[in-house]
Picture (cartoon, helix red, strand yellow):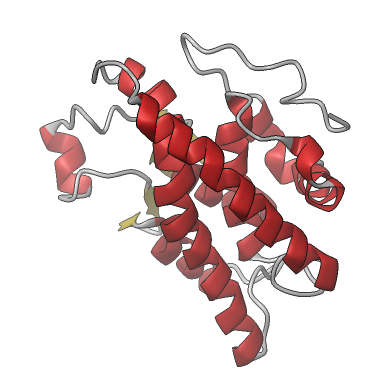
Length: 221
């Protein structure tokens, strides 16, 4: 069985979990306090970051490298299109969320409100939280624009781009930091993604010290 060393409220870990579940790869989840890395964990990943996936006799690191390895070795169901131009668009949107959205929104909201408390890193930075709350509006509007022209974020079929975006938004949704009333089309898209069987373990997550909001696991909000 594969083994994933992860942190439950990490969007990068959640992305890998979604891909594993969508491809029906059985995996053992191991909670990892990566901010207090053990010698054993640093042997698995000298960068001291999660996710780390043990599979096929290897320890794989970095979420995109892991996801593309899984796509190449377990191609069904496909999460990357066959057309090179379409694959480029998927990768662009994946990078958008893992880089721009992560730095402007996830880091300012989830990391300040949750990670700091768990890691005993002090109190949230009010300025950062305010910035994140403002920036997420821009990103939701951009998603709405994409979905107004496409069935899914990167095209007519669900791809890794959708799982990446949903991984970030699910972390924010756990702390009620997504205004789903801002865009019906984005809300409908997220409802489709979180209704997939692959999302079940994400919706079952329980973060010590933080209670799920009532709508979090509700497929109809």
